[in-house]
Amino acid sequence: MTESALAMSPMSALMFLFWFWFVLTGVLLAAIDVRIHRLPNVLVGLTFVVGSLLLLFHGLLHHSLSQFTSAVLGAFTLVLAYGVLHLLGGIGMGDVKYAGVVGLYLGSLSWSALWWGTLVAFLLAASASFWPVSTGQKRSDRAMAFGPAMVIGALAGALISSRDG
Image (tube, rainbow, N blue to C red; front, side, top):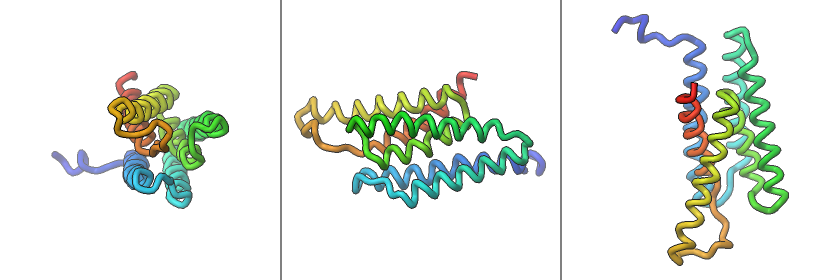
């Protein structure tokens, strides 16, 4: 391989950092959520701010903020949807806040990614809560960590939508 083939453009480096940051913080948040059933505001907020800045810088280098705008709309959409679920009593506020992060990342890709990521997260959570109940291992009214399903769903949504087009 030539040296130029190994070099990464500033735009692709920013997008690599953008997704690396999501995976790094997502794994950490999922582990915390499983352990204490909380998604710490500081880490969720930091994930959102750093991701937003990386995407904004990418847009400025590319001379187009359409991807950034789409990401912000994705974040708003998921926060709104999860907020309604929270008001109905089905989801915690930490999940609502983290939905903004997931929406930012998936919204930067496409509405298809947002849809698939959300669907996969809910299917995973439903499966995770159904299995122990069906085998008599756990009561159905016990809270479960939804953060891991959100992280896996987001990554699945990104992969599924990349195959769409």
